[in-house]
Length: 325
Image (cartoon, rainbow, N blue to C red):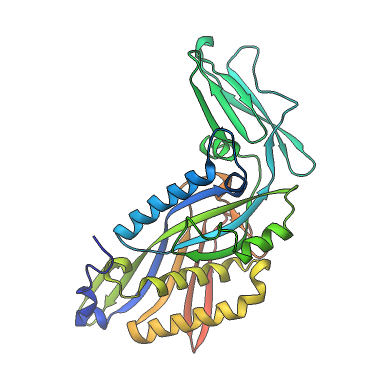
């Protein structure tokens, strides 16, 4: 299936004359720890693995319903495994204790995980500051980056993710990590690497168009990507600008009027030409990990960000849908 395969729908007179809204939800979000991309590791060629992973993902997207990736450049307080307190099992052997250091001050944090009941099933556990390795009783090893380990094991230590920059890209394997991204470079310059880790979250969205025609008592619900009623570039622009204005990060304040004007113009255009009068976005990752608790200099950290944009008398109107989760 390719983008626009169902474009006959948008040629239907009843659909054309319908009042329409966009309902936008997150399709998937992929997290990349910036440090692992720019710094080599003796086991994993992580930059090469990252490039290959996103090339494959981008091909899958383009082979089906082409979309643009909207990425967040974020920071979280720096976390490392402690090298002075090594992992250990409890006296009873039922628990595994791991020790972390958080932030510039290396605040100690102890985490506890359940251990296998049988002593023979308990792997040897070793850490470097950024990686953890489990070795089973036959010598097989499993190594994971620290943040992947915390995320995959749902280990929360009370840290939120701060969004500093929102952008979009057609080529996630290149942008923003190709070395020539001014937004990323500014963040790396202004955010202390002694206090913080930097992450990139690559997001894909699904846009469902709800169209209602009261005269004919007709209702349509169809993905924009299947009709291509709004082309992929304009769709990506609307997603990007909506999220820029929502998070309103200090790092992007200088361009906020420009972003607002572009979103207002795009929404005015699709309202006039396509009768799409409102867009509602619900950004929430289907995972309760604190890695997905996003905030910014303007927005309180939370898992669910739901908001709407519409045009009223030529002005751009935003409505926040309160959620403390």
